[in-house]
Image (cartoon, rainbow over all chains, first blue to last red; front, side, top):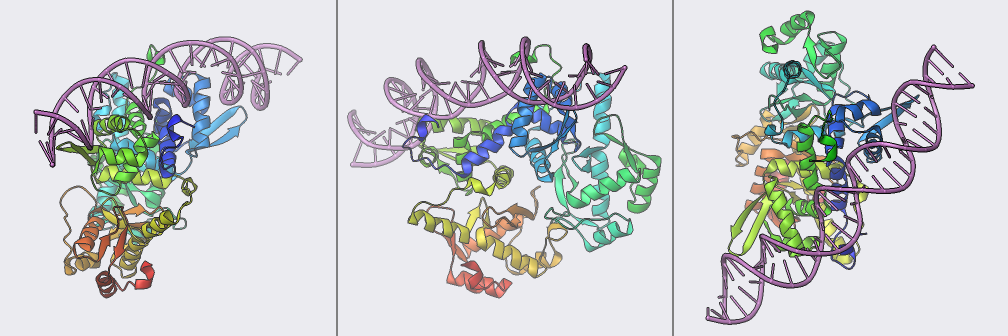
Amino acid sequence: MTTRDAGSTRKPGRASGLAALAGLLADETRAGFLLALLDGRAWTAGELARDAGVAASTASEHLGRLVAGGLLTEERQGRHRYVRLADARVAQLVEELAAQVAPSADRLPRTLRESGARSAMARGRTCYDHLAGRLGIALTDALTGRGLLRQDTGFALTDAGLRWFAEAGIDLDRTGRRPLARACLDWTERRPHLAGTAGAALCRHALDARWCVRIGSERAVRVTAEGEHHLGALLGIEASDLR
Amino acid sequence: MTTRDAGSTRKPGRASGLAALAGLLADETRAGFLLALLDGRAWTAGELARDAGVAASTASEHLGRLVAGGLLTEERQGRHRYVRLADARVAQLVEELAAQVAPSADRLPRTLRESGARSAMARGRTCYDHLAGRLGIALTDALTGRGLLRQDTGFALTDAGLRWFAEAGIDLDRTGRRPLARACLDWTERRPHLAGTAGAALCRHALDARWCVRIGSERAVRVTAEGEHHLGALLGIEASDLR
DNA sequence: CGGACACTTCGGTGGGCGCCGAAGTGTCCG
DNA sequence: CGGACACTTCGGCGCCCACCGAAGTGTCCG
């Protein structure tokens, strides 16, 4: 209990919960963990510690807090502690907070290798469970241009869009409370791209059907020749838009 | 500069910006300010200080940080400092953070007066610039039921919805980057209701045409007899759904 | 079985920051 | 002009917490 609470007119309630949640994100190391985990995969505690440049003991304490706060879920396997974002809501929250940050907060690449990784990420990457980067934008634009996705009055698939997913053999799980389509703001393109159940299904199908493959151990993806063919046939996407 | 930065493999960048932004929200007093300002109006520094139960000097420092961080804008008028949320994006961010917080974080009302204020807020209130509470839900449900708003494949107005707004004489400002329709998660009903440009226009029209009026100095609104008539005629909303 | 390894727990250290009251600045009003 | 008022600045206090290394626990593997 803090001093000022005694006898003050303070209203405890919603604000303390909000502050506690924000407090979990308000540390550079923890924020780094969450951004790394935005790739949607499970990382070990050690990987995150190395990535953030802190001691293992420090990382362990941070992970404990993030798990206790419900932002992460963990899975112990032998001597490893695997950790991932708890759900799509958390991913959305982190995305939106990151999108709010001024773009200038990003520093310029310093090495050639880093510059290459940068441009690969800009071309195409996963954002939690959907596709982002120029690939994500190209897909979203193509869906919109063909009347399958409506962005002018909100953000929703059209009936034609539903049919397109069915005909392409992409199964949309419409159970659960998660919206079928929602906008996710891309941080390189600064434009909305398709997220939600449909975005996740499209990403999963693209990876399963090898329209694109993950490159390196990072979030970046590369469109395959087969992928270019299918994207052209199904959505009229030009290969040049993906480079 | 912190100790660990020297010579570490740390990657400064996006994470520090995210942490800094979250840090602004990670204090109970500042969080309380932002929640109070979610009513969309301008408050003076003194009002916020009283509401949060802190000294004027403390409030002044917090406001300085929130303004410097771009979450608030200020307007000096004589000896008053009026402050409001910077824009709809900030409002959305605060809403979403608050919605993520477990509902149990809310305490039960302690006095009869407070209980009354509670139920008035639950009936109808503003949420930044749109309508929320049971009134907001009723409007959203009515629009959806009549095929004016589509929620099953995302969240967007339909063409019929656009016509409805035009025919009702509610002008939709379609310039700017803000989405026409987006979902805002209600924290009493735990269901999405209409926000975005259309939600704001509907709220403004409802207040201008006196379909509803603000009660007290709070965010709560009450539907007038005239409002009940129009809502029934235009959207088939039963007065009983609003009580 | 023993060593390497991943992670956790603990004690100690330092910095950041939220708080207040007192004093100062600028504005309003009688 | 002088007092009331809203806000700001400043100094000082105390707590919280991120950090590390060392020691401890549990797991894997040769």
